Length: 346
Ligand code: 13P
Ligand code: SF4
Image (tube, rainbow, N blue to C red; front, side, top):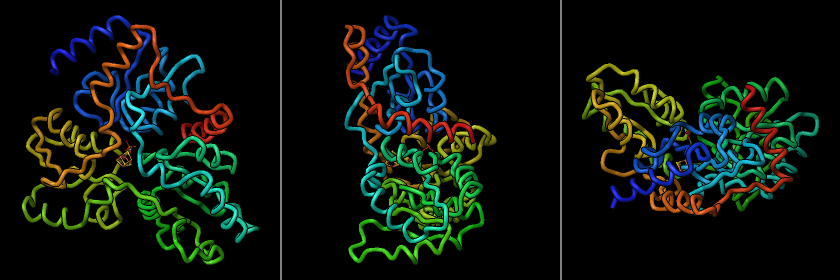
């Protein structure tokens, strides 16, 4: 049961002491978040990983986050992901090989222009390495606008991948909404690269299947039921959802908005359901409403990190065995680090 498991986790952590740090993404289950030394959004977790002194960084999150932690930490440190099944489907929507082929077409159609690729953190290390090689960088939902500004200072056009919604929402934020074209790598008709590069921002056709489920009608229903409530949503939501909301921001921004709310205020949360549940527990004086009502926006990838697996990896470490170590191939690591460092510098 949970009490017994908690005891075992605490006993293992006592034994391991400073050798271990646990990082937990805001979407992790309560039973993981409660044991984390640090809970935050992807950007905050990458900074925590970069500053970690521990020999073992246990990552409560998904594969691409653990990969980024491995890239950022020293070679002597190991990053452990309690479940190897925790893969974000969006990250899988832009495979490096596929991007390579599209890149040849897109850049071939604009030989006199410099195109800068930006990949969202939600991507695998080989794609981050590819972006670095082409002069680009990584961004998270909290700094996408800065990454675009960096890219437009350096070059003429941006290829943003994999999340078309974050890309579109960022273009609007920068007043560049008339400059958008979409690149659908699965389009059987193919794409006319010459037409696409008429625009300054090319968006890869990827999306988050959790956030794409939010619709404008969720906000309309909420406003009808609770005209006093405010709405905050994640920028992975569709454009019309972001437009209908009061505030848009990364999971860290969503946390801040509720932290700063006055007692008695009501906030509807348009993101993965676990964060809405945490905020409800963490801030009992604020009324926290899941924007989806009863329909559960649960990220199956994040859910793979079961507290029993956390217990297992910790007890194995006590026994001297490293399980589920995430290791990025050395040839990708160096370049992916360049793309991540460029983000940490902006
Ligand atoms: P944040 O960077 O806002 O934490 O988001 C990560 C993520 O996976 C959202 O779906
Ligand atoms: Fe990926 Fe969406 Fe889950 Fe975030 S919420 S990890 S983008 S599937």
